[in-house]
Image (cartoon, rainbow, N blue to C red):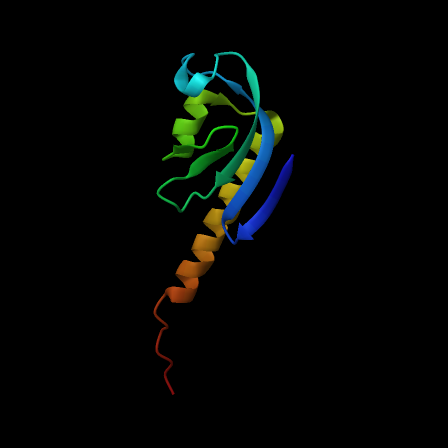
Length: 104
């Protein structure tokens, strides 16, 4: 599996996934394994985009998971990605919080 940063929270992932959606959707057959290249950005209106073999956007990670079985390695990567994203949001919130006045 390859994963690399393009910008802080956009990642690219190449992995084999099993299609579990309805056969015929974009030519995919249920139960068949396909090598996919994904772009993942949970802060984007299109959270997951299959780049190869056929470009197909998913508005949510949940929608993607309803059609594709995640291999263990990919699932672990996505959990770590989500946890990093949440940690960065907390740090941003702390940074943007109004500062308390200091009594002199």
